[in-house]
Each structure stands twice: as C-alpha cells, then as structure tokens.
Image 1: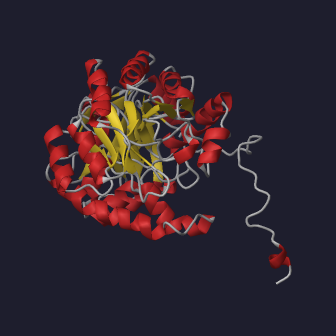
Image 2: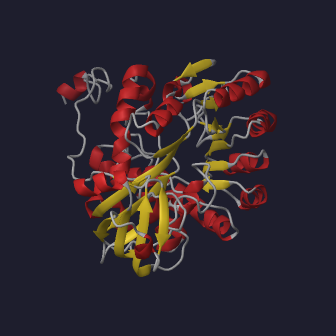
Image 3: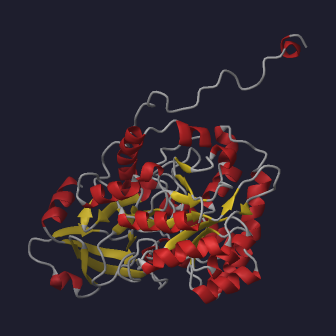
Length: 449
C-alpha cells in the first residue's frame, strides 16, 4: 500500500479488471479498468490502459468492486462524540474541540468516506478545519461546512440548555429579523458553505419537536443566503416544519420526519433535497441496549422511521434527491463506524435497490458538497478521483460497505490513503465526560429494604 501511495502522489494509478459501480444507478460493469491521477479520473473502460503513461502504478483489482467514495451529508465532525447535550455544550473548550476534530477526521477517509458536510459546528470551527484539510495541514475528506446553527429563543433539540440570546456550542440564538439577516451575512463572510437552521425544537411538556420559526423569519434566512449564493439546510422533525422549509426556499432538509403529502408536493415543487439521517435513530433502536442507552424511546424512534419512510419513498419516486447522512459525532454514532448504515435503512425501510441507495450515498452527495452532479461521487471520465475498492458485492448487499475490513483501497483526490496504519486511539481529555456520583438515588429504603 505504501508503494501505491507514493506512486499516486507522483502521477497516475491504473486500476485493472475490477467491477465498477459508477454511482449513477447503472448496472455493475465487470472487468473494467479505471485510470486516475491526482484529483481526476482520466479514463474508464477499454481506453484506460492505453491512456496510461509508462510510469503509471498498476493495481490489480480483479474480483473486487471499484466505486465512488461515500459522501456523508450529515456529519458533526467538531462534536467529539459526546454522550449527552451537557457534554456537548459544557465540556468542549474551543482549543480541545479543534484538536479532537483534527484527530477524528482522518477516520472518515479510512472508512471509505471521501466527502462530507458538517452543516453546524461548535465554536464555528468548521471553515477553518475545511481550509486546513484543503491546505494539507490535516488529513481528511473533502469537506463542506456551515457554522453555528441559527435558532430562535424557543431553542432546538437541547431544550432549556440553549440560552435565550447569544451563542453556546453549535447554537446561535436569533433575536429579531435584523439579527437573522446580519448573522446570515456574517456567516457567509467568514466562510460558511451552508447556512443551517433548526426549524424545530424540543419544548417542555410537548411531545416530539415543534416548529419554532415563522415563515417570515425563515424567509429572511433563505432570501439573504441565496442573494449571497449560499444554500440553506434545515433541521425539520415534523410534517409542518418540512412543509414550511420547502415553501420558504430551504435547499436541503434534514430528517423530514413524519413528512406528509403536502410536504412531498412542496419538496417536489421547490427542488429541495432530503437527507433523512435515519442512522442515529436506527442505532439507538437496534443497538442502544448494548451500550446502556435509554430504552424508553426505542419504539418511538422505530415508529419515526416507519412513519417517515413511506412518504419519503413517494418523494424519491417523484424526483426528490435523497442524500445519505450518518449524524456521526455522538456516542451512538462514533466517527469511522456508521457512515454506510444509511444505505441499509434506505434499502430496508424505503425498499430502494442497493444501487439506488449507493447513488444516494455517492452521486447525490454532490449536492451536499455544492458540486455539479456527475462531477463527484461517480466513476466517470473527468470526475474527481475519489474512489474506494471493496472486497464484496455492494450491488447485492450494501452492508459490505459498513465493514472497514473489506476496504482494499481508498483514493482521495487521486492519492491512496494508507489503510495499513493502526486505527487511531486516544485517552479521554480531562473533563471531557460528565462525571456522576451515582446512577440512582441512595435512599435509606434502598439500603434497608
């Protein structure tokens, strides 16, 4: 592998005889050569070998699958895998958060992720990390970044932990329309690729999440961002919020929980894309007990997947682009482990074919990276050279893409990633985790039953 890395750094790599899944949904093409060089696929198919220079590194991949690298459209790279909102908001100093992000982001490459969107980051660290990756200071996939998520005083998913004004963690609380416009402009000024809005939030004594933005407030974001050539992504965990977001010009809807017919119609009319991000819910429902997660919400989360999947299939059939996001960055979705699981849920819950699900995780990811379709996330002449080589048949079973042991090669920007290194390990930072005195109250009756 080291030889391949050095050769790819100097020039061309010829992948010989693999089965190509091109990311467009087309059937796999066995025995196909692919010629790549730094940041560009030169040729795919019969002409690839003839176009290779004499010093091209030849890599035999017969019996393996060559396909685009995964693009994770919902990854919180600056969060550092907290187990609670308390840890996320109060145990992440700015300097430590950036160190953790730089430590964790190479894991994505080694899991086959060659591009990702971090729509909202703590301390507005995202653009600096993105620029560091592009400058070669930090090893990582291509990255698109937002900054702090815009919230109203009603809050977001963290409820009363969110302050009434100002910033905390990933949140920036808006006071009025003027502040919404000013903050949106400032985020674009300081490098945001996307503007993130939490359209829904968790409120006391209310079931689920409620819409906490008005149409006028949300349009203030989209109108201002679009005037500065910047798209808007929205967290929406209700049918009402998805409808509102689509009607107000949001470009990418996260979750779209419980979306209904009116919401689907609005999504189709607006041209918005959806990243359902079922992975967090599925992990908690299926595996939460193994790590001591709360079991009270298991049925609720399974129900949310079922209730949302049917209408999202309708949206998909009507032409709404679906993107794959893992929501990696929490203790239930650690970096480098679950980036491929969304495809499994799309196959199981939406009845997409494996090739359709792969397209959602590759070709459609160009939307998250703000790239033209078919310029990235595909295996095609002239596309960027972000590829993975897998021991298995993802066209038959997408689960093989979640097993890092099956990755034989990862090429990012045409250069090979060293997969032979030990997986990064570290010790907890001082104060990183919440310390508890006990799991339950030590009552007299407990000691004296």
